[in-house]
View 1: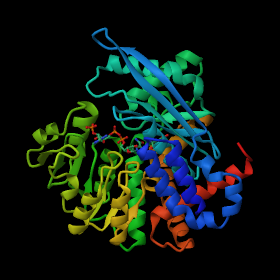
View 2: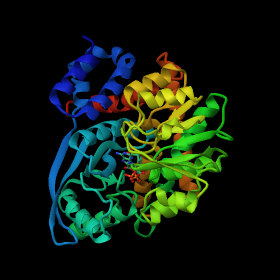
View 3: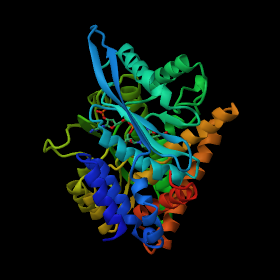
Length: 450
Ligand code: NDP
Ligand code: 2IT
């Protein structure tokens, strides 16, 4: 049995009931074969893949907090410190009722490769809670964040582990988490990224994941003789990643006609109006029905995953960018996209496309970029925020944006060249996985059995 298959079986056996983690490992190991074969005996002897697929440390904790009615609520808190071979653990915190340990293990595993691709010295980690910030008052969110940090603070630090935002964790939550960390430790340090501009945040971090996705898309299209200009683009999600992907795609001449949240989606034939979207989502924290009220020319489709109504992927487009959550683009969605003439899928979310859908998309000759490459602009800019915090300086928006653009172009080049080197030209999934892996594997080998 090939070493990668043995290790995959071991992961499934050792991590029962964690299907997302199995999926992420399967997708990565499946594409690493050509890189593993070169050094299979060495890696096997050192149990390199067993170590790579086992988190260095998992922290689980109780998060009790008091709601506005005086009732005590209890949530699960987690931090998965996956791999520190190339730098301190780095990765977001997700607050969403669907969060389980398996979700965070898949995200921490993916983060390890993504961070390696950025070229910056960051290891992989992820954390979060099954807490749902939706519908909570600011005081309730603060109470939760403070309690979460009361436990987490002892495990993180500017040189140990640097969390950031993810689903359900934005500027408000990072502010409360930072305030509590400072109060507990007495240290004012870059322990979190995505901070507000008045207390150590970086310009362009808010925009970075969405902008980075479109910079990557632009590079991928140019390599293939195309351009964003004039293209019809379907985007899912209406949060941080989606909003700034829409903004940058429209700046580059694309027409983005959709956005979505967990209860419905908008088709706007005139192109999504970003100021309206920001008003609805960033300021009012409202549903997309409000977007439709403000833009009556748009169409609102009530839709929940699996309810049988048509979802956002049934919209005719040239390019599709899933920017909401994992496994949101399934095989039937991929078929609908192909049937409607879509020629490119660029992932903004983490693992938004199922394995079957990815295979269908690649098998039908579409361009496809995996999230760990095309959404790496967020964490890359977090790395730039860490650098600014260390030198106690802040760079201008243009400086950060230009560095982000350069990093996304470099990631694309590295991914494309690696795919070609291993005989898989144009297969950016294989290119990203191998390029991300090689650096981490080299560092792990150099550091001995730890
Ligand atoms: P936000 O919380 O800002 O937005 C998430 C969006 O996705 C919302 O519109 C939300 O709708 C929708 N969504 C979330 N969960 C589900 C679900 N289970 N079903 C349907 N819709 C859902 O998160 P981000 O924009 O930050 O993150 C989006 C994706 O991008 C995630 O996969 C994240 O891991 C990834 N990512 C984020 C980065 C960042 O810097 N923020 C960096 C790299 C990747 P609703 O409000 O109704 O829940
Ligand atoms: O998935 C991701 O890369 C993020 N949520 C951002 C992580 C970070 O540390 O900025």
